[in-house]
Image (cartoon, rainbow, N blue to C red; front, top):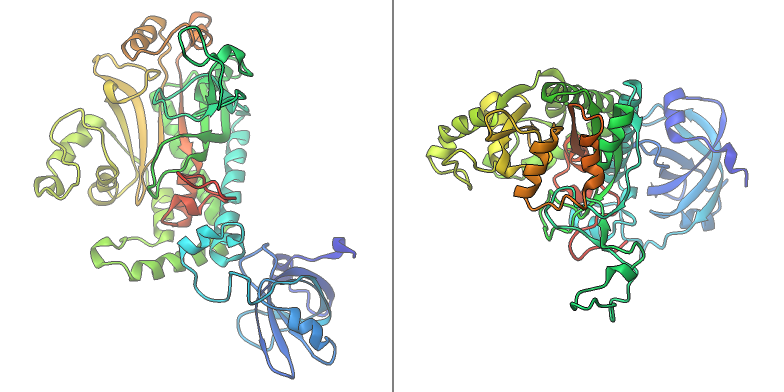
Amino acid sequence: MAFNKRVKIKTILDTNPIGTEVTLMGWVRTKRGNKNVSFIALNDGSIITNYQVVADPNLISEEILKKCATGACLKVTGNVVASQGAGQSSELNATSIEVLGEADPEKYPLQPKKHSMEFLRENAHLRMRTNTFSAVFRVRHALAFAVHKYFNDKGFFYIHTPIITASDAEGAGETFKVTTLDLKNPPKTSEGGIDYKQDFFERETNLTVSGQLEGELAAMALADIYTFGPTFRAENSNTTRHLAEFWMIEPEMAFYDAEDNADLAEDFLKYVIRYALDNCAEDLAFLDTRLQEEEKVKPADQRSEMSLMDKLRFVVDNDFVRITYTEAIDILRNSNPNKKKKFSYLIESWGADLQSEHERFLVEKHFKKPVILTDYPKDIKSFYMRQNDDGKTVAAMDILFPGIGEIVGGSQREERMDVLTKRMEEMNIPQDEMWWYLDTRRFGATPHAGFGLGFERMVLFVTGMGNIRDVIAFPRTPGNAEF
């Protein structure tokens, strides 16, 4: 079948090889025409743009043309000629069409009309064939590549941390259990509990919520490392910002303090977004237009003040403002939304856990720049964060973006053995189970830091999509593991 002679539509649009014979393969988006000629819009996924195939019924049989319905997969050979219509510089005059896969127009779900996001989520196995989702996943690919390129070029080493683990890095207890025991009749201990000694790993295990702790172990030998892998949270949340399975980017760096950590995170975010701007122009232009159309139907007070492209350049072109949590609380407490009780969660005292509405106010209304918040109260942060000298705060760092709020969370890690073990006692974290983690403080401890970026949050921001379920191919959420 000579598949290796296929030419991608992106290549044709980039090179415009008028006068040459090529073979295209792709899926029909639309077909129109009359008894004298058929115009087939073909897309092969290489670019958002469809390519027009002109089919002469004197060369292509009526039987074949009938099968060239929306969704069908075709192999088309023909000559590239200058386009007679507007929209593209060339088109393909077909000399032969082979239908690789038919699509019954009475049954194919994705017809040439606007479908709701909910309908497309219900048909997630097909939704990447739409312009919106093909654009999202090409951008997602570019962002993932940029992540690896950034860290590789900086001399970081990519570490694959375990997906099955016995620790709960966040201490929240929202983990998916991993077991091979018979759930209908699990073995019991003499006390009546489940006897995990008879399980595969001979202990209780779960899917990882973070690769950070194992990443710290690697950083204590290789200095600069990063993880980029799937993580899992069994949080029964159906919001537009939560998934049960998502991807995390987690660099860990020896010989870094809190300021070094913030510097790296800012540089990293700008690099990755700039890469998308430089390499995904067509897809971002489409997604920008899509978002503007979506904004038009919203009430005026809910519309974003910035277009998608404005938001991306807003991050790339501005130095991030750096303020402490304490300064942020003062700003929020004295803000008009707080005084006029427009915040859903009013800020009344120091120690409050900031919500998305507070984070967005700081970024979008007060500073009009991305914000790095530092030095949070220790009582609302994790055990591994380095305590500051005031005894009240930790060297934590969150980065806040417009439209999304927190996008990065990190800290300088607590390297002092006595301070760390005391904090673990306060938070009821069993030290005997974390002996391996504490060994990094016993043997050759050094100041070190790191941060975590939920990759889907980044894709959500860069694509302008409104729901995190629409930036991962097959979303896992409560009650949904369909595909």
